Image (cartoon, rainbow, N blue to C red; front, side, top):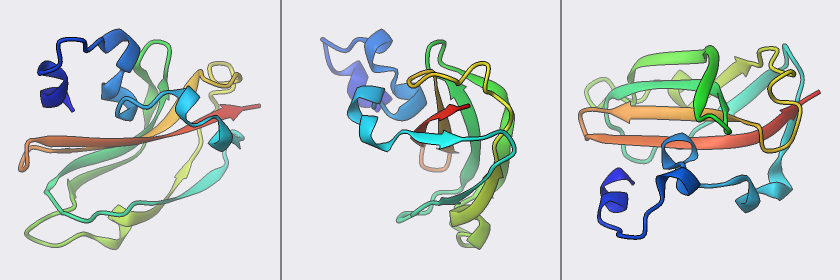
Length: 134
């Protein structure tokens, strides 16, 4: 994405925010906004079609400031390894939602972000779940 953006003369980083949710905006996904509660366990499933060794995490992000709120809910080193294979917990795992009701009470304020950075492939992947917390 970063390479593609650099080649587009009309690219606007402020409106795209591709570093957080691959450029997708809430308007692209209003039918799929989730509602979570503090302490809720959420099952995550990731489809890895082409392993590249790297690091990964799942965090709550503030969409207004493009920052991570608190600490990652789960972190992986040696994620999607090309030498040892993709571990089952890389593709099927649970996270526990932190209490972010104060920051994430309104639609469009926050997302759960799955983030995978592979220096081996010199690529970064991410996906987001729009949510609110009561």
